[in-house]
Amino acid sequence: MRNLTVMPTLPQAHGFKKGDVFLLFGELFSRGYANGLVDQAKAEGMTILGVTVGRRDKDNQLRPLNPEELAAAEANLGGRILNYPHWAGFDMDPTPSGITVSESIANVKPTDWQDFKLDWSQVEEAKVHSYKRFRATVDQMVGELETLVPHGANLFFAHTMAGGIPKAKIFLVLLNRAVKGMGARYAPSKELWESDLGRLSAKNYDAVTADTFLELIEATQGLRQKVEGWGGICSYSAYGYHGTPILIKDRYLWQTYTPYLPGWSKMRLEDHALAAWKQGIKAVVYNCPEIRTNSSDLFNGVELSLYPLIRALRHEGGGPWAEAQAKACQDLMIEGMGLEAMLDEVDAYHLNPIITPFHSDFQDWPKHNSQAMADLMLATSDKVMEMNRDKKNLITDYLSGLVVESSGRIMLNEGYAPRGPVLWLGHDLVAKDLLAHHS
Ligand SMILES: NC(=O)c1ccc[n+]([C@@H]2O[C@H](COP(=O)([O-])OP(=O)(O)OC[C@H]3O[C@@H](n4cnc5c(N)ncnc54)[C@H](O)[C@@H]3O)[C@@H](O)[C@H]2O)c1
Image (cartoon, rainbow, N blue to C red; front, side):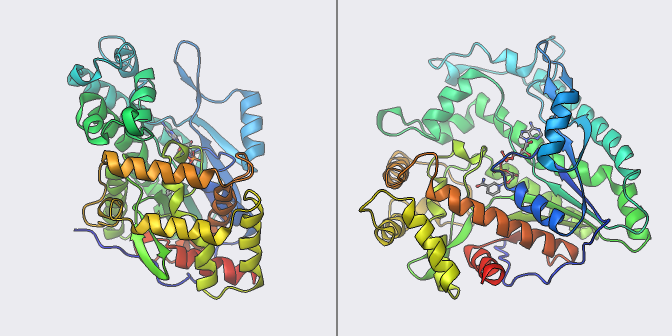
């Protein structure tokens, strides 16, 4: 049984300062969650470091960034990149048969995927190879990092890695049906997840989304002891997802997106934080609200939970800044469309009896979808999207920016003296933080 440990109050201001070191474990994309943490760490004058997942040559060899790529990545991060290729997961690693797992599924057809059987011993070998490769890379990176943490400094690790769908065309087709398919195009997510291809994805999700955090914690044991030895703080954060409490008709209710296929791996990530915490390590998974990023764009409908943030801002005290946010969202809508009517529609969706059995059962998370649930979620998502004036400048992009900013502030502040290993950031906390900062 899991506990919903929602952060009840904003953290105290932290003690990270100029000269302390911040390391982003994952790459920074323009819309990604990590921007909030990086911006906050920069604002405090911390030294910004990052890693790369590397790039692949034509022959599939994983390599560090070349000088141009490195310069671009460092400019984007605003800090130094420790240039070792941290690509995680085993789908592109060699198997004893000489081909990768991805290559072994390259010819699976949309008509025969359900009968397709993997050679699990090959998969296991690729997995062992990739875990060793990844750990060796992290060890190299930590070797360099040790030379960059000055005596007396604090150290903050920000894990952002998530992913794991194997690189093969068949997954584009299958995910389009299981996650984005409506009507005749719908295929149950459970059928995909219980097939060999689904089981393969789940294992790769574990490797990328969860076990990279464990590897980071283990590989930095010596450095952590050194930092703590001089009285410094060594703190680890990871982004989790496990649903979010949002305001639905004047009450904060926990809800989730369905079918969140990486959910089992996100719980494994939480387990890694729980185990580390028991050993006295400041390792925290922050379960963050649904926003739109490169990664979450796969999950159409996930953004429906984001709109009620507008009402949470009013609920937590409102005022001119909150009204300015509501107006900014209204201005993004097609002429004649009302923001309040849209928010009422989203509330009605969250309370619809077709949706609630899938979206409000915390103990039985994550769930697979049904045809009726998927049809309603995707149709509502489309309907609300159609209310936007410009598909390239969406209300959800605007609100995502607010959540990214706020989550960064909350996580860095909390990281100095965290209150627990698994913490949820509800819309109430995000709204409180934004109002406290901007009002
Ligand atoms: N977007 C959301 O709604 C949401 C909600 C809660 C939590 N999160 C979590 O926030 C974190 C950042 O995600 P985001 O949504 O900002 O998207 P993003 O696309 O900006 O970030 C994804 C990260 O995963 C890394 N990554 C992807 N594949 C990898 C691989 N094979 N090996 C190593 N690293 C890999 C990328 O380098 C990047 O740092 C993730 O852990 C995600 O699960 C996202």
